[in-house]
Image 1 (cartoon, one colour):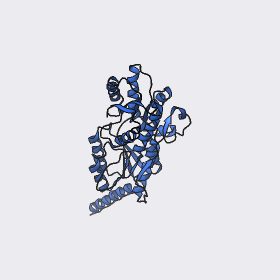
Image 2 (tube, helix red, strand yellow):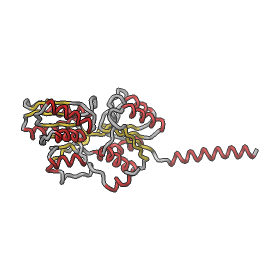
Image 3 (cartoon, helix red, strand yellow):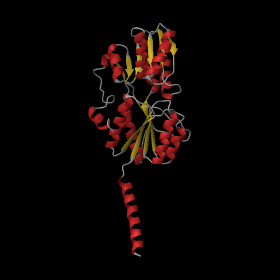
Image 4 (cartoon, one colour):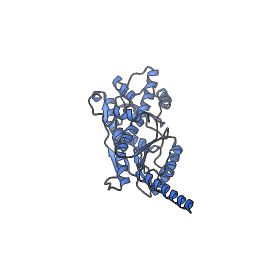
Length: 323
């Protein structure tokens, strides 16, 4: 009899402990990135700091490259099993992630996309990002001005099939089409990888020895392009890109890159965390699609523009870089 009572009391205590632990457990947000690199790391630091401030446990997942679509799908499936509260995802594909993200939402997880809109005919995934078309157009405005409205352009517009890269390229070409003497004579869709960019640049420079202007989707591609040009003892030409890494800033100061869209990577990360926080808490959200304005940076303004949304602070970096 006493053994039975003891057994029942033990079960009740264990159940209560489980309930208590669930009550006091921190809600969890997974921050999912498509690639590796300094800009992605800084975005994670900013997201982690904001999430911690709001009382969340923050997890970081990285697909390791835009081509690793299946890996990112598997990561989302694992998060569904784990029953996280929220997912912020910079998707490797605007279509391949649709079904698994729909499953995540249907399981009760709040999903916010960052930069890449994921398409669905069943629901709308909230999005925080830059206006890609307008960003491409701004790049074209600066390049057109520096080229005097004429000359040959070679371009690395980004990964093939990548919606954000395609929209940015559309904005770029839409503007330069207004200038008949500006011609895109070389074009290769490639991964955002320095080694790949070097090979693609070498191919285009061999086929088109007279180059008057350059466009790339991402500053890693510009680093590859410049490496290929230096190997041929070429001189700098007007050159526009996006993002502002330490190496990109160095190339701007040296005159190899004319302008970059520095964006607001830390601002988008923080805004995505704030949005998923509202969704988890059931608060009213007035705007599900938020585009943060682009910021074009040239050598002349490198030392005077406000970097708070571009460069993560040392105190935040020190908190997260070893975690």
